[in-house]
Image (tube, rainbow, N blue to C red):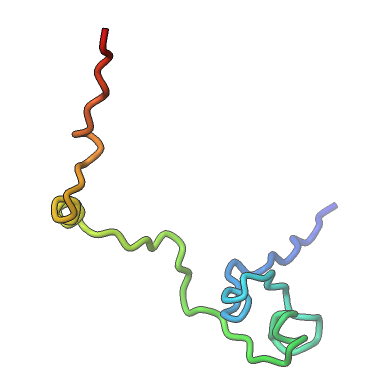
Length: 86
């Protein structure tokens, strides 16, 4: 017996659900192509153009070191362990 693979839910939440941090369910069968949350609220359901996964904004290492130096902080490797007094 071969089963048809079930449709998976969309990977990304729509903009409204993402902003509210709520579950973005699939659109009701036969209805407009809006998620169940937007359908209930009669909103326009828009999805982001692209996924934001893995897009962490990180500066270059040199910029991070410069920022640390400017604030007077020291990188973790420069921290010395406390000496034990006897």
